[in-house]
Length: 179
Image (cartoon, rainbow, N blue to C red):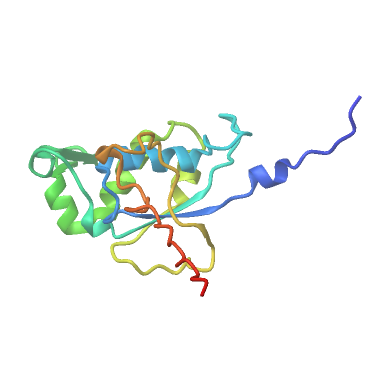
């Protein structure tokens, strides 16, 4: 029988990720799904639905949030005050963006992609959204980008690839003349 003690405490440790929403080429839904995976901890080897092993995600630049199609005009958000009469309220994405900013839209999208259980509010509290590029969590940041599901290294759909444009040239040495 093995007596080796594992290092699961490293797997359960929470890491801080930063997502630059303005610089990311993904739209709202694709970005929100990758953030939800990071908040749940599905990218870790010790993931289990009953364990809360997710990481922190700091989303900056939410004022440059990308949406496709005509969602700004046609996508509606609903709420009810539970009061009879005028308790039902609705607003479109554009008005929500003007009133609360892009961070609220991103939070609602991520909230819809998290499982509807007791851990939902705890996981959503680990998502920190900011309209600008400044945030108070700079000392906590270890990883600069949230984990994404990008697979195609050459595809423009998945973003640029950092490769050198030209192979380094080998310089030839001049021949020594014998006199």
